[in-house]
Length: 113
Length: 110
Image (cartoon, each protein chain N blue to C red):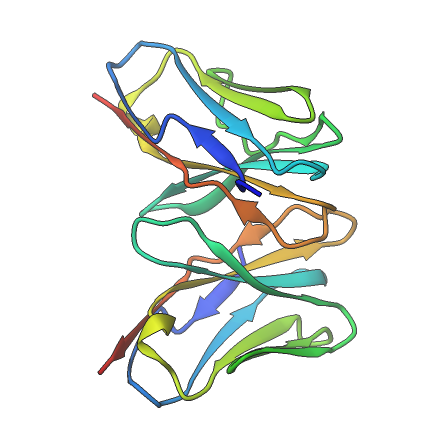
């Protein structure tokens, strides 16, 4: 099993540009989570999908952020327009059941200049 | 609301023991423990469900006191490989998504 796959690993973009982060969960995992990690705020939940349906998006900072899960094997997190304060490591995680342990992807380190 | 972890940091010598605590103001359904090494993703260690159970994983074990809404992670006879940041994640009520604590940085010295 290849685990949770995220791309790109690193992204450097200019303020105002659109950024799209991608995630492929483990096959058979029904729950998918997007987290953001910064030194100041730690690990923050952005959005949680169960069976491809968004269940909790209360952590999405503002309308600049959007997430989709068109099928069980793919999810995207989009930021448009990006701002320097969006700089962070974005993790995608999946689990076979909402209450099971999470498997995290390697993360995308986003730098907005 | 974010669970509170203590201590924030701990330094040990190889072979020593450590305890990391996690407490919540909410009634907990479950507590997860993860370890993250620098520049890497968090790795799942164990999950404890309400009921006051205790679990073990090699020389790492944990307990969950449902009444006090607290969990503790016990690391015995620590090894160099135990170094990293430990996070507890909690789920409350009917929600199953985790809210993570701010982490405890553990350093094991030779």
